[in-house]
Image (spheres, helix red, strand yellow):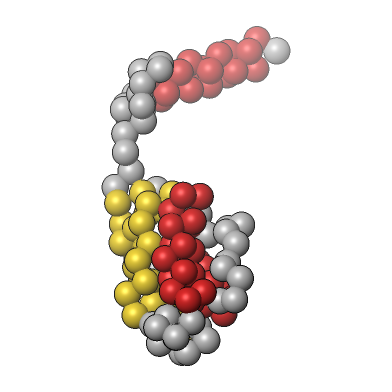
Length: 123
């Protein structure tokens, strides 16, 4: 019995010693802001109404901070709703910080879905 207690004590002391020797993290002080995540730019492509649609997505950690449609064959000059979708859907994604749950523009469903899917596929 005494032997088991002694072994348990050695394990507990070892655990504390290993924890004390662990790598120090730069956790923010209470009430402080966490360090900003490094921005990463990714590219994604999805099929739109007129063909492939490509986006550049900037992420900081898991949050999307910028979306730019870089290439598309959508009919933005002929259909005002498509032009709206090309502007409003990326802005809505940035505002939400994610493409999940973002609604498309009525009258430009395929274009809206292509932008959302391209953002989700960005790698």
